[in-house]
Length: 137
Image 1 (cartoon, one colour):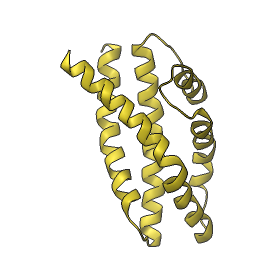
Image 2 (cartoon, rainbow, N blue to C red):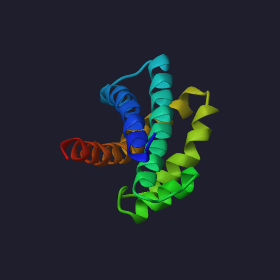
Image 3 (cartoon, one colour):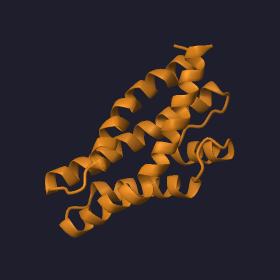
Image 4 (cartoon, rainbow, N blue to C red):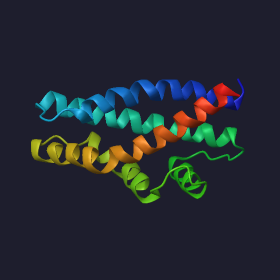
C-alpha cells in the first residue's frame, strides 16, 4: 500500500470517530454513562488523529514514529496551529483513562469541550481539505 493511500484510509476511520465525538460535544447535559462515552470518543479520536497525521506526514516525506515527534513536525509544517494543546492532550489522555470520580470526570468533559475539541476539529478540517484536493486531482 502506498503512503498516500494509507493516510486516506486512516482518515476514513477518523471521519467516523470525529463525527461521533462531534455529536457528543454538541450535547448540553450528560449522565455518567454519556460522560464516559464522550471521554472514550475523545481518546479514540485523539489516537486516530495523531496516527492519521503521522501517515499524512509520511506521504509528504516526513518520517516520524512517536506521537510527540509527529505533533512537533505537524506544528513546524503549520498543519496544526497549537502544538502546546496537542502535547497537553497527549499527556492527559493517559490520565483520563484512570479517572473514576465524578467531579474529575466532569472536569475532563469540560476540558474536552472547551479546550481540546477545537484543536482536533482544526486538524480534521485541514485533513478533509487535503483529502478533497487529492480526490479532485
